[in-house]
Amino acid sequence: MINFTVKYYKETRKETLDTIEILWFSTLTLYKIFNKNSEAVISLASKMLGLLNELDVKGSQTALLKIKLHLFIIGIVIKQRRNDLSRVENEFKSEVTLIHELKSEITESDTIQRIIFELEFARAYFLYRQKKDKSHVVEDGQKRLLDIVTILKESCDKILGTLHYQTDMDRAKVSLLLGKFQILSKKGRADTTLKERLLKGAKEFQRFSTLKLALQTYYTIGFLHLQYP
Amino acid sequence: MRLRYLALLSQSLLSKIRSLSIYHESLIENSAICQHGLWTIAEDNSFYKNFIKDNASRISYLDNSNIKTAKDIQNIYNIHESNLSSSLRLYLIKPMIANTGNLTLFSTYD
Image 1 (cartoon, each protein chain N blue to C red):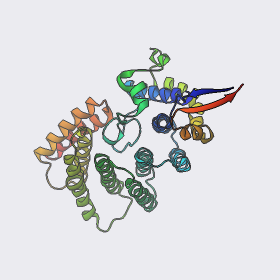
Image 2: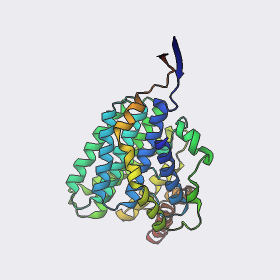
Image 3: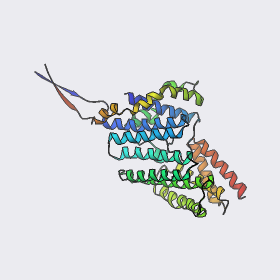
Image 4: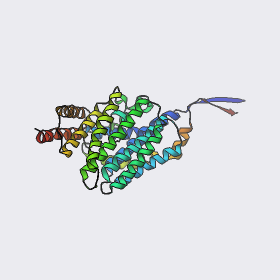
């Protein structure tokens, strides 16, 4: 006699991928918070990227996770490796190229715009750090400074203008970088619009409990008032 | 189940870190500590819907009022670090990924 049994696996493929998406990125973030060795953190992020390639799961979800991991690496590379800027520049470009390749797997236009925003913001921040560190001799330094404003106003602001929700925090970040740049450039005038943007941004940072960024914004407002009373 | 527990643990630790203000995102943070824009967890993520949204589930011992400093959180993290790293073992994940969730008919003989 033949008995038939119907079995249903509790965790499906999608549920597993959903869990991994959250688990791996949180694990990496915790590792970053408690491990001060940036090379080890980048190594773990690279390992995760390798494992995701090995899993060989196609689609928007895994492509987006890979993109986040590349952006995570960019964040560390730009902030930590300040003594070898040409190496940083190469690594930055390499990560950006990989993100652009993965971007073609993303289907949601809103997500694509947000990825482009993150890339443009990272590029502006990278140029700002180059100028701030002053260890990098830039022949066309003034042009690069203008590039920062162009990227932030013409690219980042415009992208955020096309998105319909959840842009306040990103707008606050753009304002803060514009303010920081204004202090660094020591040229031109900080117009009222920028000060108002900064004040709005500071409140947004507070709303998200990102108090470090809120403090930086209030400091920037104060400094601009001193610089351009 | 194990992956779910670890995901819940990692999310609870991040939540505690945020609530105690022991770590704040930088201007180019790009990590899971961010909760805006590209970094928001998708609404259709099943783990998010079942365990994170509306604080549906949490690791209760992290609510202990004695846990209030970065060192306290780090001690808990250190205990679980190897468990969290174990989630990267592909030989455990691959069979789960291969499962499409379809009903499977098994036949057995008496």
